[in-house]
Amino acid sequence: MTSSEETPADNSKRTKPLSAAARRVLGVLVEKAKTTPDNYPLTLASVISASNQKSNRLPKMDLDDEDALLALDELREAGAAREVQGSGRATKYRHAAYEWLDVDSPGSAIMTELLLRGPQTLGELRTRASRMHAFDQLQAVQECVDGLIAKDLVEPLTPPGRGQTFAHKLYPPQERQYLVAKVEKMEAKSSGAAKSSSQAEPPKTAVDALLARLESVNERIDSLEKRIAELE
Image (tube, rainbow, N blue to C red; front, side, top):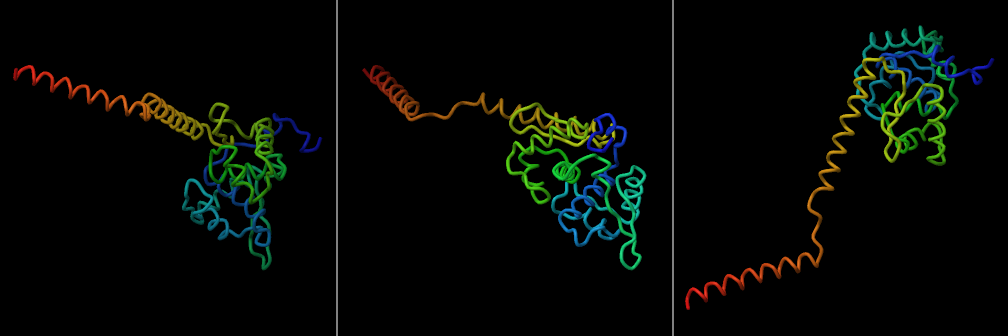
């Protein structure tokens, strides 16, 4: 049975939750293989620099040599990365994401963006993953995400509809629990703000403004008539 024929159950046995540093390093290895192939595989210094870069990363990290080496060891033990000898016998590292995750090029692009930036909507994924794989339509992203969900690699964090958010499933249990709680809190806050806005006084139209002016005039007339009556 080839990797493309494996069932989601087989895939779930092969993949496993990864630490935050290991997820960042795996995302970096796949990203650089796609965007800067001439400089791939990566040296340890390149892994650290790419992991700590300010763009296309969330959250920001500050990995040092020890952090990166521990992350690479974790990935190698999981079967998601390999150590290779580069030119001049320099040690370099490459990913094995296609085999480990059982994904194709579109799937690896989506997974990489989720690993590098966390939960995102379909629109965000299409825009950001386009530097690694061109998605002509949003429907293509939806189909790719649906395939990753079937492989138990991705899950929706919010209900279906506009702005639905998706996340990868490589978070350790405690971190995933925190992530879900954070998303739910943001959703509740957003829903509360929308409700407050809907309950606020609607903007006045020209007719409303005219009626308000007439009411003010009537009040002034009533006041004048009362004063005249008192004088008489």
